Length: 224
Image 1 (cartoon, rainbow, N blue to C red):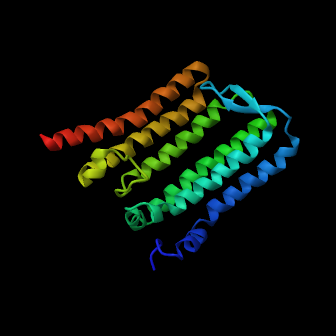
Image 2: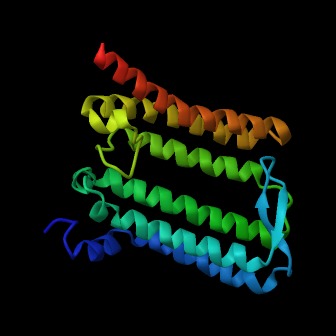
Image 3: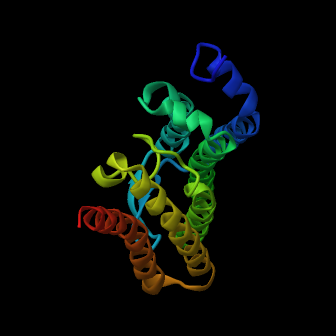
């Protein structure tokens, strides 16, 4: 019986116990911290990691926790709702790793923001960049093994319509995301202030635009 059949959710529950344990731990920490938080806390940070929006602590505790659980549920059901979902199942551990990685990122952000709220930290830029850097490095490691689908990966008109363009774009994207993630992590560790903020913007812009440009260039070459 394949993972796309009715028993797939039970199978995913068994496979994903480590990430579900992480989600439970993030919720436990948030609920423990909630009564100790002040009435007014930062709920948004600018590019420099400084708080620029304030609200009730429940926003950080409950909304982010719900988003984390919702992210896992979405990732668990993507193979069932994507018309090409069978290809993700055929990718085996690669898609499971992506599912864990994306959910782990959200759980990590939940814990990080709750901790910043509890300790009244005035800066989140360094830890945030390190976490995002590790995320892109991990995703880059498996990007080249992501099969064509409508939900995960570089989904442009050119990659979705040509398997070879999909394959080449994702192989390059994997390398770009790994290097970009490493640079993000190093930026979070060694830079600060405006320099860190602008470095973050430059790296993220490259991580987004390079795969898009490459897929279009490969398409034009295929039409020549």
